[in-house]
Length: 97
Image (tube, rainbow, N blue to C red; front, side, top):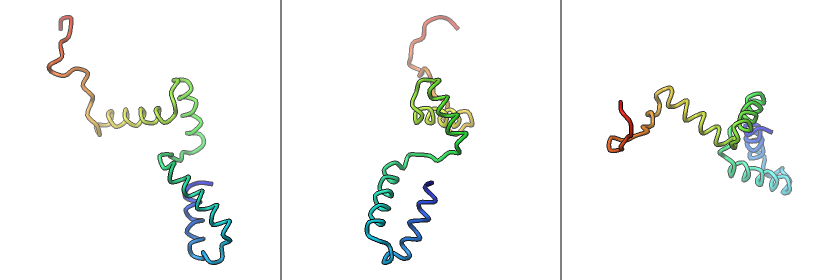
């Protein structure tokens, strides 16, 4: 069940809460609590999800770290974030220019 489907279900139940058995309402509230706790999850289509999982395994990093890296690199490449400086002006460098 997707998050939007679950949100729609909660909305429908809230319209007729008196008719919902207590056990069903308890299950839905627990499921809602789990979804809220895991709010950092991004829903992706299955092909994208599978590709990301494969790349994460190939690179030896957890998928959330891979997503952070991909998004950060994209933001830098498209000038939404500044390019990180490897050296500040006070750093000493060896060699000649």
